[in-house]
Length: 163
Image (cartoon, rainbow, N blue to C red; front, top):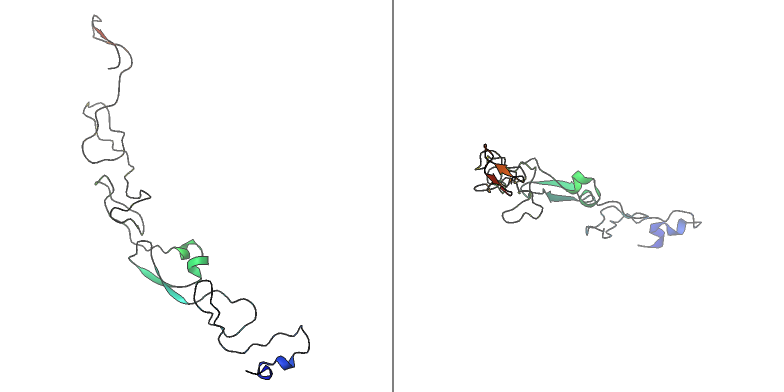
């Protein structure tokens, strides 16, 4: 292209705008895509190429403008589908209710499938309940220890703690 066809010969002052050729810009954007606008002054705008974005649980996907996956708000950066997880928690009794759960078998570094409900089953003593987190199997023996002397009703026999 000649300087004449670009209009460079028409500039009379350094303040006159620099003409553009009209060809595709083609500069590589930070995301790796190329700018699709025609030749333009100044920096390129955000990448508007549609990309496929998978949700956190990897079961659903959507099309979204590329720039939104890195610069958008939190709902754009991380796509959460409406699927509710129904996998059993560590106790094998309660189920996960997390939206778009990304926990896979044997991979739960953040403990999302760890049951943190209190067991509350009656203990073998019959007087107390289990205060451990929900668990598989039998509860531990009653941990309550009497810390004062215990005597029979007539008072002749006394047993000292711990009892």
